[in-house]
Image (tube, rainbow, N blue to C red; front, side, top):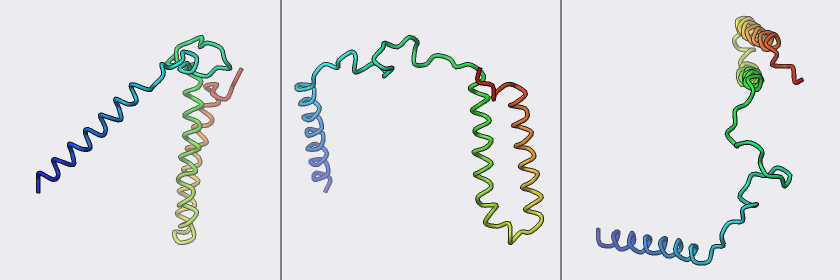
Length: 114
């Protein structure tokens, strides 16, 4: 029983090694222009992992706030009729917190793009 499994593992290993060896034999060297990131045919001016300005992080937080808002509003819309006024009060408290976050981001300049 174990001999059959060992034989299949050996055949699979030889097959994978053979495919890898065949690829190494017939593969062409990568062209330097095809390996570079695409920037309209120009060479990159900065490293791909360069730092971003802090305002992009604020814009990301603002996007996530609205994204989470929508994530919570869909199930809320399904159960609001069953729960009643309590669900409406809770949603307005949540929307108030999101609104405070938007006001903070606006004050910090996350919505200024110039």
